Amino acid sequence: MKRIRLEIKALSPLAIGRQKPGGSVSEADDYIPGSVIRGAIASQLLRLSGHQSTNLAENGGDFQSLFLSDTPAIFQNAYLVNPDINRRIDGIWVLPATALSSKTKPGFTIDKGKGVFDTLIDRFCAECYGHLYDPISPNDGGRVEPYTCFYTQVGGNYYSHSVSKRLLTRVGINRRRGTAEEQILYGIEVLNESQDKKQKPIRYYGLVIVPDNLGDALCQFINDLREDFRLGGSTSRGLGKVEITAKIVESKPQIKTRIEQFNAKFKKRWGEWKIFGNPNEELAGDRTYFTIDLQSDAILTEQWRRTTVISPEMLCQFAGVTDSSLQLHAAYSSYDYRSGWNTAWGLMKDVELITNKGAVYLFSTTQQDTWLKIVEYRELRGVGERTCEGFGQIKICNEFHTVFREDAV
Image (tube, rainbow, N blue to C red):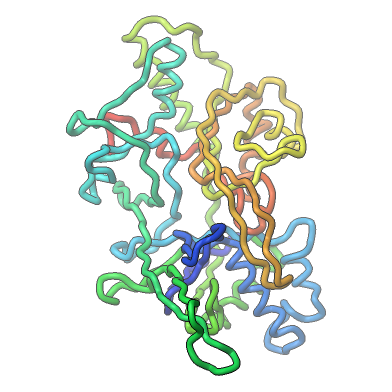
């Protein structure tokens, strides 16, 4: 599989609607879902079907492989990049649900906040040692609360990425008279195309995972039509204009290194907790610990029922293996509901129960070698349903779990 990095520059406001029942205001998401990118590329392929300028659309063969096969291309979500970061970055991640920051002045220190730190490992240690864990802000001693955002690490500093929005008010038009219709007034919330008085254009980064034989062709197709794509709704009214550039990413995630570093910090932190006494149960030396961090909303099902927890049985089912030693030690997750609009069918999508991005699951196993390739494949393909639309993106052993309270960033 090849990884294609997409850089999406907004040229007009984006109406990336988040479906809410009732109301007269269409709310916008904070990112560009993979399903929106997938639909935009598919529509261009169908529009150019049979055209000599592209091989992807000819005879429907490659279209079938990209969108309708048993292992289709995966279009991951595209997240916003802080306009103050002018250099290319390795990735944009979702802060874990276990991250905390000051209640009075939350945020990273470089963003003039009081700092952010993670609590997953300390919570695990506190429970095993029989103590309560109620941290305070490392800088001012005040209260802390969960803190969520998109972030990236550049040169040892952590930067948050937040999107700015505005509300566009529209009036309905009477199709017969061509004038404003009475009692039809609605608002569309949109993502801004620029910041700081239009001095800094907005960019989004995303990934597309495609079969090796189609990577170069899809990359060339996107670059050839870079200014022809439209994302989101109300495109006939001037919204959704973007410029998309694609580039194949050769480097692969160093999952083995992340797991080794996580376990080294985990066991070192366990030893530091011994100043509070002896644990209720010693840490098993033959077990390897790893986390699954949701980088996008996930649709999880266990025995035909929706769930928000990835159980050991579910993980074994995803992997197609049996491991009686696999244990789930902690789960931090929440849920929401999501729907959407299928342009191809002209119908509403089903309302799905989703597990919110940022959820964290802590596992351990004695079969490290067995799971190393499995988690590497799962990080590439995702977990749960509709992964080709960006759902179920994960990261194994997010490095932020090793940012402790005394080292808040």
